Image 1 (cartoon, protein in one colour):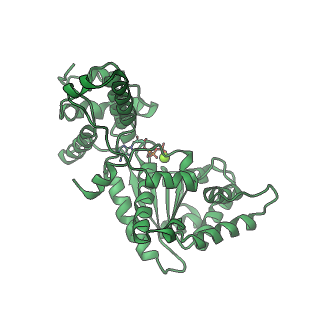
Image 2: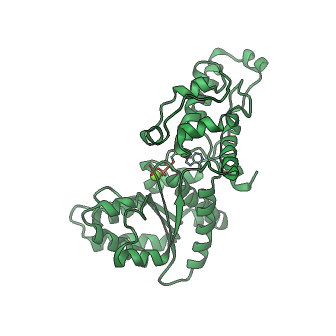
Image 3: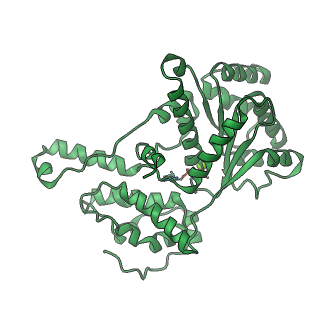
Length: 353
Ligand SMILES: Nc1ncnc2c1ncn2[C@@H]1O[C@H](COP(=O)(O)OP(=O)(O)OP(=O)(O)O)[C@@H](O)[C@H]1O
Ligand SMILES: [Mg+2]
């Protein structure tokens, strides 16, 4: 097991939600560690009180709704590139290099971006333990609002830092305050999610310029994530060409299934997720045997695969069968993309029913 996988095993998926876009929520995410619940033997179970048993069931239900993360190729690539760029950008006064993670919805972009931030911040905290380290805010995570204006973008940064402004605050007030706080707290990495919203907004040119201004004034490495930004013209025009020249593009695509190597990678992803299950009667390896079926249902999207496995695990606890079967997997509804791009043929695979 790689060290990263070992580290990821202790991270719940902790839904990358709104709360990550504030300093407190982000810090909770960075510091959060959890261990999988212990699976008692049959004898230990019968010795427990009804209440203790119910608590254990609830703990396992919670755990399976939010399984640990797998170390995917996208996470690996983003972390390696991110580490390198942060190093290369240190001491660079301008023209710092950045990264853009682009791909379809549900392919794990937000997960990879937040893992990059988490890994970086934990490394910084290790290097600066104690009080001095606590005052550092090395990573900022913001999302671009839909129909964003330059001011809305600036306010997102301020909101992360917990700085509030009255309605009469001007753009320079907000931007200057953000830059001052960033300098005081040693900002090193800026993560901007939902970057495709910039491409859709009416104020596209102004918002892009505002972002560029931040990228010049904040002495940090910038990493963006968004849905299919290349296809949507992120690199078109003079502004786009400048981004193209400075940013490394990392594709976040669904898993492929064409070659034996692809199949091995898909099976190994399933094996990692299966390994994290804590069900009483689940036979290890039975999910990996269903690799074809799981690919047909999900089209290789990790988001859909994760919903299928987590959903079936929760149902297996609720109906007390304690194992994932094809019948249970069949019961889990998937998102529209997975169902529309991968029509589910009635399986021919022989499976445990
Ligand atoms: N490395 C991983 N290991 C396990 N599950 C993962 C991993 N990456 C993503 N997932 C699962 O896939 C779901 C979707 O991932 P995520 O939200 O990161 O996708 P996204 O590409 O950002 O999607 P969108 O474009 O819709 O924002 C997550 O909620 C998580 O459950
Ligand atoms: Mg996302």
